[in-house]
Image 1 (cartoon, rainbow, N blue to C red):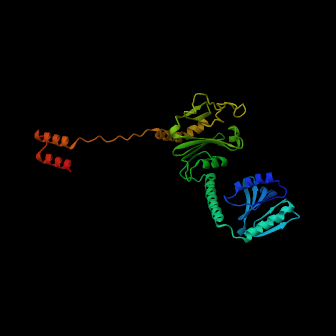
Image 2: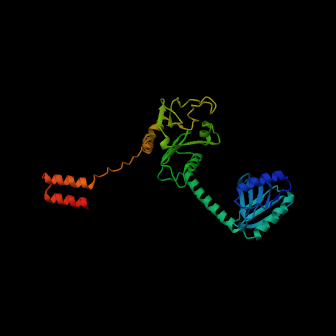
Image 3: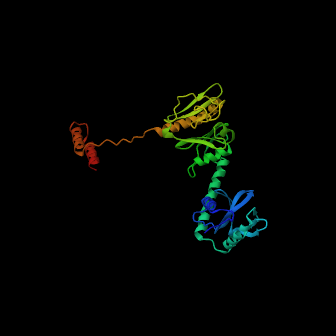
Length: 342
C-alpha cells in the first residue's frame, strides 16, 4: 500500500501513482509518493521503493539513490528537505517537501536501508543497467559516427545521428550516410533506406521544429531514384507506388509559404531530399551504388529444375545403336555402359 503526500486528494494520488509506476521496474512497489520542487535536475515528485529513493519528472527518472549506495540521509522537517550523500561523495537535496511528509519519507527510506532488497527486483535492476550501458555505447558510437565500414558523405547533426541509430536493428550499421546541408540525411542499409529530417534548421524547414520527420523505404518497394535540378539546386526523390514523381518538386517550391502548406514542397515531403548539383555530383558514385543495390533487390531469382534424364533403357539402346554403327569402339561402348549401370 502506498503512502501519499498529505496534500494530494485520492483522485490525484491515483493518477500520479499510475504515472510513477510506468517509470519504475515491473513489480517495484511504491511505498511513498509525493511532491517536491527541484530545478537541477528538474523534478516534481519523490518516490520511495524497496530498492531506492527516486526523483521523478512525469514518467522520467531524473535521479535515483539505491540504498546500498547511500552513505547518509539527512531529513529536515522545518526546511522540507532531504539531503542524500552517496558512497561516491555525490549529494542531492530534495526541496520543498511538505513538512508533514518528511517523517513518512524517513520511515520508508530507513526501512529500505535496513531491509534486504527483493532478489528479483535486484536482478531486474541489473538487467536494466546492462541494457542502458549497451544503449549508451551505441548512442555514443552514433554521435561520434564510429562506424568504420560506413561511407560518410557530409556530417550529420547530433540529432540526425541519434535518429540514424533508431533506424538500426540491434548491432546493424548503415553502409551509406549522405547528408545534405540543412535539408536532411539519407541513410542506406542492406535492404532499405531512410530519409531523416530533424534538428534545428532542418526540422524547421521540414515543418517539424523540435521534432523529426523520417520515412523508411524497402528496396523491393522502390521504383526509382530520381534527381531533378536547376542551374545550382536540385531535389533527390525516392519513388515508390505510394510516392509518384508526377509533380514538380522544385528546390524553392513552398519556401515563401508556411511550412506544410504546399503538398509538393521537397523540404517537408518524406520521400525527397533537397540536394545541390555540387553535392549530387560529389555523391554520384554512391547514389549509383544505391541504385544498383535497389535493382539487385528487385530481381526475381528463379531456380530451374534440372531436366529429367532419359530412362536407363533408352540410354542403353542409344549406346548400342552407336556401337553397331561404328561410332563407338568396343572399349568405348563397354566404358560408357559401365558408367550408366553404376
